[in-house]
Each structure stands twice: as C-alpha cells, then as structure tokens.
Length: 106
Image (cartoon, rainbow, N blue to C red):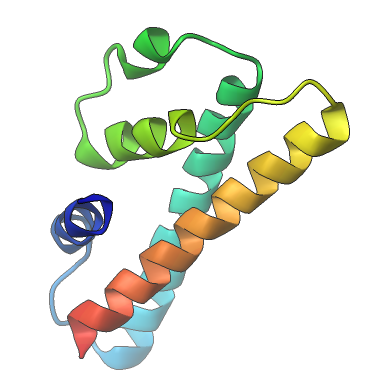
C-alpha cells in the first residue's frame, strides 16, 4: 500500500517530458527536497511531537505520506541514535523518490 501511494505523489509532483539532462537535474532537486522534508519531519518525530500536530494543516499528499512513514518508525532517547534514525529516514525517502522516478521514466 505504501509503495502504491508514493508513485502517484511523485507523478503529480514531477514535470512531464523535459529533456533528459534537465529532467535528471529536476529529479535531483525534487528528491533532495523530499530528503530535506523527511529530515525535518523525522526530527519532530524523534522529539515525540504528537502526530496529530504534524498532520494539522498538511494538505499535500507528499508531506502527509512522509509524516505517516515517520510515525511508523520508533523514536529514541539517545541523541546519536536519534540522529542516525533521522539520517536513515531521509535517505530512505530519497532512495524511494529516485526509484519511483526511474520506474516512471522506463
């Protein structure tokens, strides 16, 4: 179910049919933004900000998806473990972004 939603968000968010080099640049920029947003959301998750606060006012599918994914993972007390989870989550969401784009462009 998770993987079915992300491609739809990605497809809506990406530009259609630019030249390959421009498209790669746009994908890199978009997936980097996904990683930055995922990082910020997971920071709040690790601080145990309630999910209801994180979902309030989020109407776009991508940020709601990232909140749900972040709150599907644990929160930790140790600062180094928290930071590792934040970094891993951001990277995981960027990997998913790139993979989904590659699948859409095939």
